[in-house]
Amino acid sequence: MTLPIRENIASLIPYPPGKPLEELEREYGITGSIKLASNENALGPSPKAVAAVADCLKNLHRYPDGSCYYLAQALAAKIGVAPEQLVFGNGSNEIIQLLIAAFLAPGEEVVTSHPTFLVYQKVVQAQGGLNVVVPLKEMHHDLDAIAAAIGPKTRLIFLDNPNNPTGTVFSEADFASFLAKVPEGVIVALDEAYVDFVEAAKKIDSRRFLEHRVPVVALRTFSKAYGLAGLRVGYGLMRAGIADYLHRVRQPFNVNLPGQAGALAALADEEHYQNTLTLTREGIVWLSREVEKLGCRAFPSQTNFFLIDVKGDGKKLYEQLLTKGVIVRPMQAYGFPDYIRITVGTPAENQRFVAALAVALKELQYG
Image (cartoon, rainbow, N blue to C red; front, side, top):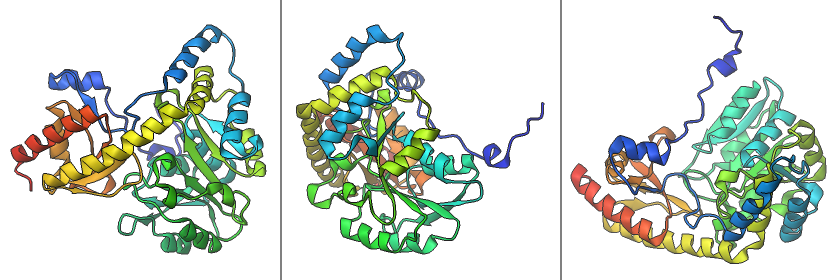
């Protein structure tokens, strides 16, 4: 059977999903594995969020609130914007899709970096747009080169700050200087999925730029610091006029009922949120010190994950760690064949990782 598939779809490589933990354990004949590969919250969700989700299950025969009214009111009050400046999605991924659907026509361009979050370029290709990709410079976004790459067909720029996978950030002053070089008619999407983990002195106050001459849209999520990755709730901060266009292209019930209930409760649990930040910051410091004792290089990060130069084949080390029930992320697909990426776990998980890493490095004779 021959299907009339457009070339931009036929050549699109699907996002590579990881195997379920249970399947990896079955393959390797192990039990009690720990997963430090997907930048998830090691503490799990807020108990208040779990209770709120359980309580809403009796209403699963009802459609969710298409406007996310209560979540919008609470979030707007917490971060200091108007509810009309918020758009919620099935993860911040959906806000990326909505921006591209609303503002990118086939043949027009989107500027991104490499490496960066893979979804940007995939959605652009699916839309029939053109990806203009600028390499990172010393593990950071090259803002000067990105500005120089803007052309007459550029409609969007995506900047993840902090960057995934490097964990690096740029300053508010550098961002302001960059925006001064961006022409009218271009939207800059500032992906702040990991902003909660950034040191206060290094954070950009993205609210200051929402009404900038160059429209800025900040993307955020409940998946990381709030521990709700399984519920898929994200949102964008933007001027109301842009939000209006995104509402025109989004599906009417795009954030499900448990997702709204869980996010609203998680937002109110400040203690759990602060515990997450403390666990992450202390874990980064401890893990970085310990892996460097083993002869590896820990790359500084403003997120809940960091890169490790293992001084050898990262894919082989990943496979060696799997046999010990420790799951990390090899980085050759991102252009870093000698690196792995790990997420901060609980103290017990962190200790297990370091012990397994020490044995695996000796087995592979790295360092």
